Amino acid sequence: MNKSVIRSITIISVFFCLLWLVGLGWAVGEYYAGKPDTIPEKTNVEKKAEKKEELHIVAMGDSLTRGTGDETGKGYVGVLMDEIKEKSKQDVVLTNLGITGQRSDQLKEQIQQTEVKRQLQTADMIVITMGGNDLFQGGQGLLEFDTVDISGIEQKFLENMNFTFQQIRTSNPKANVFFIGLYNPFSDLEQGKEMSKVVRHWNYQSAELSAAYPNIVFVPTFDLFELKVNDYLYTDKFHPNTKGYRLIAERVASLLTW
Image (cartoon, rainbow, N blue to C red):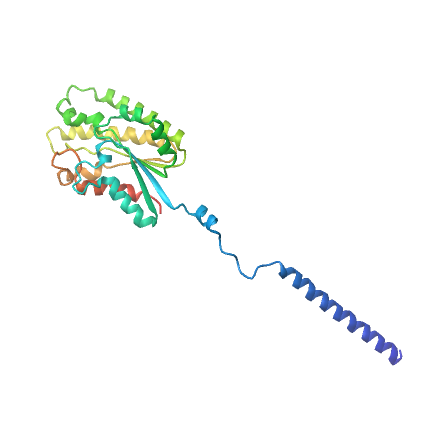
């Protein structure tokens, strides 16, 4: 093979090699031309959609929801709000629908009101205290303990709460609901032990009812008051004092996920 042929083959080889390199460079350039240098930051709309700016809590129930007996005026709802604000770093909006002296039959009527339903629809969390006025009748239940039909009162209470839970889930299928159980304010009295048995059974039935619904959690408080009940009661010996309400709030807060 003469030198001119070898030279021609060499030139052609080099030419195709250069052509391949140019093509490779062009392809790589085209691939990265459509890629941003950095990941763009999320728009304000996306950020707002990702994190809700405030939490809405709806509180329902009786005088415990109103905070009767708390010298600070906060009650367990106020203490719980402070805890949520601190842990979540979000603003908290409270709608307190509690009514002093309210019984479960009255709550059943309240839950059907248009404005109450509207508040429930926007709630992220719902807390309820109910049953003390049904069972204890403002303290009179203990005086009539021997004659009162506890089982009948309990059954009617469960029917009312079942209806209430149905209405809550119809208005708001997703919000977490915390149903706070009863303590026995009379445990240090003569009939205290018998009344404690009644309260424990009442709480058991309430817990079973709560468990039948999604995201409705029964919150026990009986154990918090049982050993030192007078340390945590207001001067009326029925409602919690400031320390008692804090115990209840801390029990509810312990069940939240941050």
